[in-house]
Length: 369
Ligand code: SF4
Image 1 (tube, rainbow, N blue to C red):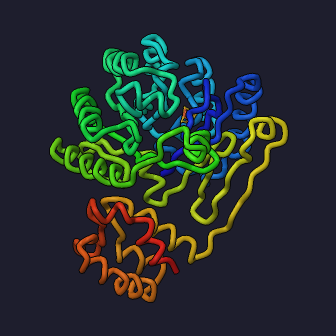
Image 2 (image 1 turned 45 degrees about the horizontal axis):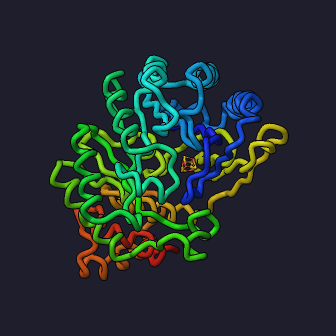
């Protein structure tokens, strides 16, 4: 089974830290929707006829789309793809772009999972990030999401914001727990050089990120989510048992997915493909780049993504897919991490603990072939 990701490239304004592809002008909205339809038709065989288990509207800001526009996209997908009964359909929503009515309409269309970009319940943090909503409205949106009947709701929160004290971070988490929602994505603020925030920090007009505060807040996050019965199932993702993001799990478990829209990535099991990151080019002159993955690439990707999850690296899987030499080599490489206490072994699985997950990328890089 596989998933489909749809990149909606429009945003009302650009958040200072944002490194995703999005544009603030919507003048090509109609052209974009047409181009999306063309791409969905043209790539109907990309997944080799596999059943579609998840559909994910990401961005950008998918909640800028009218429900009628989402409906048309879903109609095109159901015409050209085999979609399972009751697929997980997620829509990313920004609080400043939704109303109770729009949430109700999305829900009626079959969107059954909302991912709401809250980031913080404190207005000074939101201002630091240049988010357009305020905390009062965010709380209102969460109420609406419940009232219209969304069963699966995940919030995005960010820690490590210079204006965010440990006390405020605890409060953000408490507010999240009080909503009763079952899933949380909590990201460490990362500042990319070329973003507005990166430039502000470079010029000395915005406070830089304090690494120590970031680490403390990660510990607070791990402790508080665990106390509330959440599983830390991926480095930035926490869920009550059974409430994992099925779509994102496709990425983390190396399954196939089709990405539609500008800048969207796809994976068919043997190659990766990514669409041009320009709305104009996407609409007028669609192009993509493609990379055939070598055995080494596939192994490295498996190590990288698996170490970031609570399912860890499976020695059996390595043996079956890459051979004994890879399995032996991996086993030898785990020794120092098992000794340091960052990793533990459960049967044939090698898993990073909460502390180890912080170093997942570095540990994976050491293990690359
Ligand atoms: S709403 Fe999301 S995608 Fe749009 S600018 Fe902000 S962070 Fe980026």
